[in-house]
View 1 (cartoon, one colour):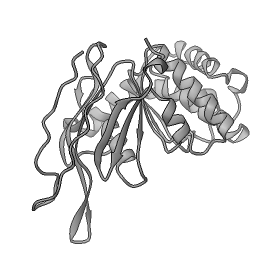
View 2 (cartoon, helix red, strand yellow; view 1 turned 60 degrees about the vertical axis):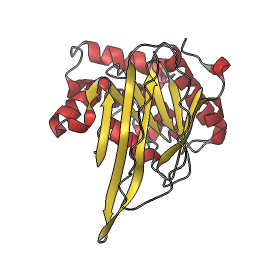
View 3 (cartoon, rainbow, N blue to C red; view 1 turned 120 degrees about the vertical axis):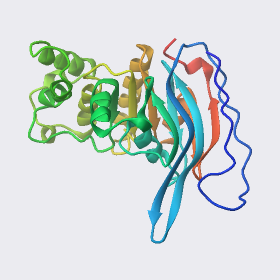
View 4 (cartoon, rainbow, N blue to C red; view 1 turned 45 degrees about the vertical axis):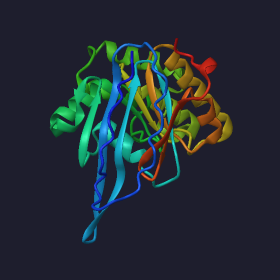
Length: 268
């Protein structure tokens, strides 16, 4: 697929002249079919007192099917805000967000909930497992909410996914009865419950030690090798260097977008 070159707007939510750095050259185009993610001139501002603060300032990029992309940059520069835009958790001030072919920025809350449940898997830094449900029940829950698979298939699929992440022996335990690394692996199984086209991970190794971080990263590589598309926000420089494509956000703008090691692509 030839990557679309999107013109950059001359404003970013601020009035008056503001020096604009040269936009980075996009990552080289690769022939992988239609993009899973398209972001076009995305702006996000938040009201503060009598004014506003603009966090994202006209961001544009695409992610194709089967890519593994790390989103990096200093804290407070818009990385997690961007993920919230991509998943429909928050809405842009202006611009377009098209994910799995759907205009996320135009959808109603009910449409977003239904779309998100079937097409996007989210892995959180703090796991977000329901403490009163077993790991197995936590993985089944998204299937129940989306009405996907039959009632007989759901527990079978949940057990298969827990086996995929090496947690089949812990399926009947509560989240509080397993380690943080084990909870995160179970959370990844939950994110895969409805076989989404896109996985989004926000600091997925932020609360894990180096060994568990490596295990989660290896699991992500396997999922990409199986055809999943994965976007990961991370502050872990070691992990970020091992991801094939890096998108860096600084002061609300993309300052770097490149492939950093073609030999490390695992999905093709």
